Length: 91
Image 1 (tube, rainbow, N blue to C red):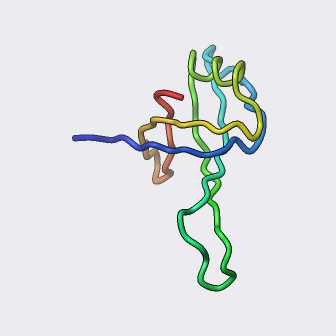
Image 2 (image 1 turned 180 degrees about the vertical axis):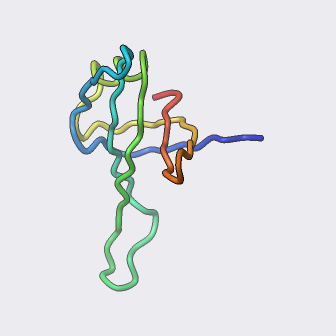
């Protein structure tokens, strides 16, 4: 089985570290522009996707990435109580 997704987009805001159970965590929001124009307005729509980062990945991202940085993220999907979460494995 394979649970993997690749996201490439721009950070909406500067990432900030929070401690959760003694581990560093950050949630970044990626704006990803769709590859086609909206039929109604003729403009490109975009999606804003929250991605959770833990430990060293979270610390490195906070140190090196700022708002409007373009990033590529390799992630996995996790479902808890019917809520879908994107967990980053590499940035």
